[in-house]
Image (cartoon, rainbow, N blue to C red; front, side):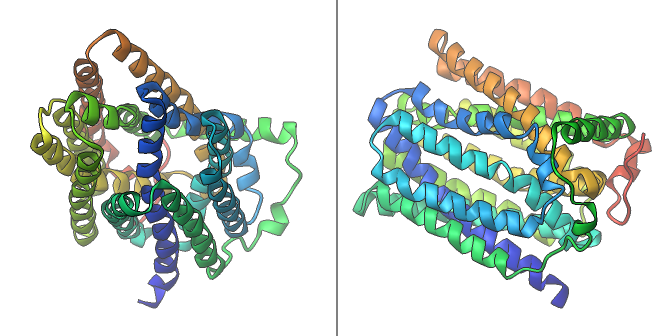
Length: 407
């Protein structure tokens, strides 16, 4: 159990920030919709992060792979905490968008940094269980956050929800401060990040993708299905409030109940992580998640929407844990920050395009019909992913006791 001390500390810190994010996200969605009455304005919230990724991720990976990951994550959380804290004192929509952009620019360093840190901190044989427990923490936050947010909004308004999120970032920074450094040889490889350095880093990532063709195939199929899901998320509150004609309270309740499915899925994933193949986590998890999106946008009342979301949340826990383990096991840790940052940039471009396409198409056609079509396309990508991961000759990529990244 001693070997789990530091991983549990990391999960606790990030889990607290997850909780704060959900408390704040629900409040922010409702605030923007009530402020503008526009589905496009709400969708704009989902475009800010991809824009931030495009701004930073051509060079952020080069920084991440050359600095102390632990100190970087601490700095990022402190910066985000301060910026989130000022949001309640802003009344302009575009100023809020600007602050959110700055928050996401800082946050674009955190994901790739944490992936590298986790890979170095957690032994390979424990990673699937670690990622399942991390998913459990995320799902717990998904369950508790909206419920807490709903109560706080009812009795104290949205501003307190946002301040709480700022505090959780500071708490997360403290937990990470308690963890050890894992970059023992960093001083030997540190060098100034110049334009030539960035170009060479891009070439290194390109060479890796040429060698790891199967990994790239799985990665692309998974991300295509997931990014369509992210685009559909931008219409979630609009679908519930305007198509199903449910209230703010109903929306908060649906999201809260959905957390039960996500928490259940993450719990089961953590329990069976040693028994089920990684391929099942990724392939079946993503396929059933995509089917959940189809069912949700085909729903016609509170009950069917809630049941669909529970189904979706349950299997997304498996998909996320499986993908994280697959990524950590197949991308060399020496270039993981660079690969993750460049990949996030490409994903950001695709997400912006998909979200805008979805939003514009909805202006011309039925919200439900367009979202169902998008979700079916996502399910097709997930089906191709399921078939791909079960190719017998590629089983080595899913071994949890060794790395297998060529071919």
